[in-house]
Each structure stands twice: as structure tokens, then as C-alpha cells.
Image (cartoon, rainbow, N blue to C red; front, side):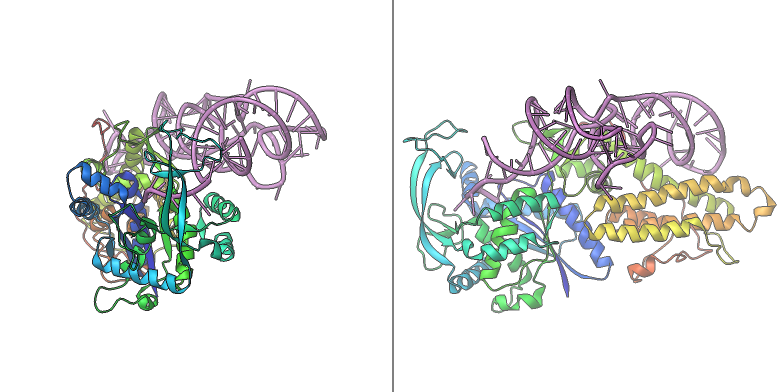
Amino acid sequence: MSFVITTPLYYVNDRAHLGSTYTTIACDALARFYRLMGENVILITGVDEHGQKIQQTAEKTNKTPQSHCDEISQSYIDLWKSWNISHDRFVRTTDQHHQNVVNQFFSKVQESGDIYIGKQQGWYCVGCEEYKDTGTNELLPTCDIHQKSLEWRDEENLFFRLSKYQNEIEELVNSSNFISPPSRKKEICNFVASGLKDFSISRVNVDWGIPVPGYEGHTFYVWFDALVGYLSALLDTKGDISLDRLIFSGWPASVHVIGKDILRFHAVYWPAMLLSAGLSLPNSLFSHGFLTREGLKMGKTLGNVLDPERLLSLYGSDSIRWYLLKDVKFGQDGDFQQKRFIDLTNNDLSNTIGNLLNRTTSMSRKWFDNSIPLITTPNPDNSLKKSSSQTIQSFKTNFKDLNFQGAAQAILDLAINANIYLNDEAPWKKIKDPNYTNYVPHIIYNVLETTRLIGVLLNPLLPDLSERILKQLAFTPSSDSWSAQLEWGSLKPGVSLPNPVPVMPRLELNEEI
RNA sequence: GUCAGUGUAGCUCAGCUGGUUAGAGCACAGCAUUCAUAACGCUGAGGUCGAGAGUUCAAGUCUCUCCACUGACACCA
């Protein structure tokens, strides 16, 4: 059984922004978590490259749509590489392979009798590129946004019989674990309850798209094209393409992680399309929120967009991943505040976790021959061992709920407990008292071991920091399964420790980003 | 406009079916301390819980009105 996680296929109208980076980081963390839990994970990401907007953008910059797409798509590939994203597949919707899958998907839907030719009629605003529901009887309605009069359009389109699936979709969206978070689920339920209408799946005025077989001049509507990308990602490119092979390739997806803006397409259209094609439905959808910056919406007009590339080179991935996953509740909107970002990194990662490691390895080296204390007597049961196992429990539960915040907090709480334990036990005092000669090694070992568990748990959230912590502890995860690594007492007594180096230097608030 | 939601310390938020002096983290201040990355720990100051009215022995928690903000309301993604 595979565990398939998808990011959205990002629209390559422009380069990646922090929002897509955010989604991708979250999916990456999730994928790493499930891999460590022993699942056969397939993390899918990619790009959606068709549509009128892309065509226009390419024209503006005097490029062919294809070269525009090549360029932007490459920038996504490079970006994910620099962020060390652990995706297994990267789909491009301009790939011939994908186009073949779309064609086959379409013919399945056609066979189900769910495609018909209809007329798209209505008042259309060229500026908005959309039909307006004027709801009035005005002779010449105008667009509120553009203050221009609307055009009457009467266009021949292929339609998909969404309405036929009203009952199935209604049942699906109401089922308990399909849509998260609950507030979004409610929106979709209301939307579906108001009655589903058929939607058009082809365009006659958009050249930059996949041609609809048998309908000259029609290209597929981007959503009918892009969503199918999740399937093409799973089908290998060798031999004949067959949707029937999907069940052996990992379909259905375990979770589609998406932004709240595209929830409806995933919660309503996509399941209906899959039903029509006779394919199984994804297990769940998680719709996360948007990021603002210092309370303001990021956008070109304000000129306040955060460039993920620049952020990464300025601060490194650990602190940014921590900020995005720990400070923003997944599913809600988040705000990127630079001061808060610096504070959080310094407090949590440098002071609480990094310094815990630093102070403990220092003591261990100083008093125990540059090594982990050689414990001869049995390790007495202690509070840290207990809170560690609680932390591991809580961490896993939270992760399974995509509650990255809760998972991160669990780790942090453990580090705080370890710091308190050290202050309570004060080994730097006890080491001077001969009565404690046999006890101090246990104190140090307990904290070192707790720190190791923190390092191991940190792996899916902050893989880089995790590695640096474990290295300082001379612990090599080797081929041990994660659950073995999470066993108390895996740190080998007597092993020599490297010279302590801060694993997470404090950040200064100065650079303007 | 219709529907849904939010408004609690400077900031981000917890406060379940109403019940003693309203909580946490960060920021801020003080104390203590040196094993450590001017770190850790302890303590403290900070709120008429959006406004008003009502129900109740008792309301941040229920009802109504108002104010402010946000989201959904079908084919840009």
C-alpha cells in the first residue's frame, strides 16, 4: 500500500511565492513523517501549465507559451531542490505523457455518458475573464470592478454532468474525514446543498491547452486538465497508458493538501470526475490558509512579496520551516512578521533546543572524558523518560492530524522539561560532591538521551537541524527503523562526543527582507 | 444582498455543555545563576473578554440589537 500525498500543481503564471513554498514544506514534512513511520510514501508535486492567463503572460514577454512554461517550471524544480523538498514525482501538464492520460480520462468520462455539447451563455467581462451573474434585467450591464459594459457571449462548450453526481458528492463532502478543517467543510457542504450545476470542460477561445479529441477547436478547461495531473504523476511513462493500472500505482491519494482557494475544485469537481471515470476517490483533503506579511496581503501592487529564494539564503530552511509549521496553525491564515520570526527562531531553536544540547554535551565532555557518560548501574527511571514517551505519543497523534503546530509544540515542551530537569538537578553542583559520583552520570545521560529524542523527532519538521543535533550526539540513525530510534536508551554510553558547536546560531533583526 | 464565521493582555491565540480572584506563548520588567549560544530557571506587571440591552442566584460563555473585520455565494487560478 502506498501513501500518496499531493501538493497542488502550481500555476506557472509566475514564479513561486511563499504561499506555494508553504504548502510544499507542509507536504514535505508530512511525507517525511510517514516515511519514517514505515509507509511507502509518494509525494507528488508539479505544475499546471495551461490556460489563457499563461498564454497572455507569454505574449507580454514575447515568448512562446512553451518556453515561458519551461522557464517557470524549471524555477519551481530549482526552488524545491534548494529547499530540499523530498518529492517523488514532479508533473508537468505540458508533458505528452500527461496529455495522453487526460485523453484517456476524457474517454472514460465520455463512455459514462457524462459529456454533452452545450451553450455557455451570459454576460462576460473581458477584464475579469469571467461570466457575470448580473441577476438584473438591465439591457447593458456593466462590470462593477472594471466599470465597463459586459459582452454577451454565446459559446459552444463541452459540459460535464456534475449534476448527476449530486447525491454521491453530497454524501462524500458530509462524510466525517473527507474535508478538513471543519470550517471549510461546512462551506463546501453548503455549496453542494444548494445544488450542483453542470460545468463546462472545454474552451473554444483558448489555444494554449490540451486539444479535446474529436472536437476541433476545443481545448480542455484547465481544471479538467490539471486535476488529472495527480493521476499522470502515478502512472509510469513506459508502455501503454492505462488508468486501470492506477490501483497498482498508489491511487487513490491519501491526502490532497491544497490552499483554500482551490478547495471547491478538489472537493466537488474532482470527485465527480473520478466517479465518472470509474476511479476511486481520494481519502481526504486538507485546505490550509493564506499567508500575509506584517498584516498585509502580499502582492505585486504593494511590492511586499516575500521571495522564498531570498528568505532561504538569508535564514536557512530550519528557521523558516519552524516558523511556518509551528507558528501558523495549519488550516488557518498566518502572518509573517519578521520580528516574531526572529524571536521564535531564537527562543525555540537556539535557546531552548540548541542551548540544551550545547550545555549538556559540554558538561558531558568536561566531566566524562569527552564522551557520553559510561553508565554502569541500571538507568534509574526518571521524569524525562516519562515525558519523552508522552511527547512521542503526542507528536505522532498531532502529525497524523496534520497539526504541525501541536507536533512542534510537543518537541519544544520536552526540551523545556529537560532544561527544567537540569536546573533542578544542578549537576554542576553535584559533580563537586562525592556523594553524587554515581548519580551525575545518570543526570547527564538522561538529558543527552532526551536531546537525542528531540533530534530524532525533529527529523520530519526540520531535517537539517535534526541531522546537526544527532551529529553532535555522535548518534547515527543508520538503518534502524524510526520506532527503534525512538526507544529510550539508544545512546551508547562511553561514545566520544565531538566538540560542541552551536547547531542553531541566534539570528539578528537587521536585514530588511 | 444572502449565508457562515470572527472580535479576550502590546502581538498570536486557548477558554467544552454559563459557576470561586479570566489563561498560555512571545514581547516587557525584576530576581537568581554559570554547565551553556548575554543562553536556562523563577517571579512579576499587563485585559470594564468589540458596544449596548436582556435572561439568570451567577455570563467571556445563552438571547436580541448595533459596530468592525473575514470567508463562501460555480467555471482567473
